[in-house]
Amino acid sequence: MAKRDLIDITDLTVEEINEMLNLADDIVLNPDKYHEKCKYKKLASLFFEPSTRTRLSFETAMLDLGGSVIGFSDANSTSVSKGETVSDTIRVIEQYADIIAMRHPKEGAALVGANACDIPVINAGDGGHLHPTQTLADLFTIRRNKGRLENITIGLCGDLKFGRTVHSLIAALVRYTGIHFVLISPDELKLPGYMKAELDEVGAQWEETASLEHALPKLDVLYMTRVQKERFFNEEDYLRLKDTYILDLEKLAAAKDDMIIMHPLPRVNEIAIEVDNDPRAKYFEQVGNGKTVRMALLLMLLGVEGGLYA
Ligand code: CP
Image (spheres, helix red, strand yellow):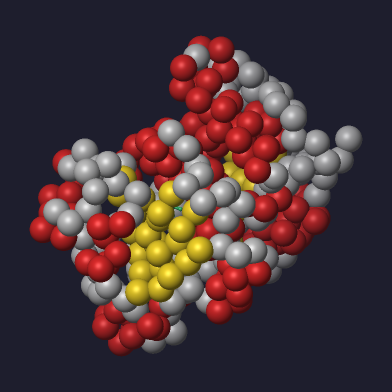
């Protein structure tokens, strides 16, 4: 049977995503059932770019399934520093591991890796492009808190130009019915035109505003993002834009009582610390959900549970 990779969230059908989220719900309810499901399986965790949550949640996910982990968190300690290509690195790693999670600063690197080997490759973030497993964590968090993935007004706020988590989340949610996107950003960090054209092509409801205050009262979900310093060519522009939106308790007073606040993290200044104790703040819960849903993903891509078939 041909292997499956996860490079773009649209590599999964809506039915497969729903099945994965159901499996993640069962892992929360019955963790003991899964403790040995990946015994003797090895995850290669290849991080060519810094990460805290994604790397550690993938590694914990495999350990909680009874498997083991190899890999690196700094490409400078590998033969990449001697000039080895991504393709050759992946072809080497597939001799040792059963599945690969890979983050790389270059857009498309995970796809290159997937095409070079015969084991499943998971894109753990490629440059400013895509971050499909963050999207699985985001969908799981929305569904657990709102009870649905349909008929939601979601505000996406901050760096919509370079924010790969936003790009993947929009691509996923647009396939559910009744989603209304409110795109909140300064002019310089608007969602790329090609993505707005894609939203129009499928008849999605969306609006754009620069005002968080204006958008807040109508939202069911507020998804805050950091301005992506590492994607800017010019430090001056970053410094000018980085604090455009700061969510604090005063602003939050205008939001619905059951709105949830999400953030893929790391946070810089976008959410004041005082918001952390508000019951609507779900960003640390979102981190924990990321581990659970990555357990479900590993099980399904390895063919241990559920049906992900090519
Ligand atoms: N959300 C996220 O991708 O965080 P890390 O960069 O720490 O993995």
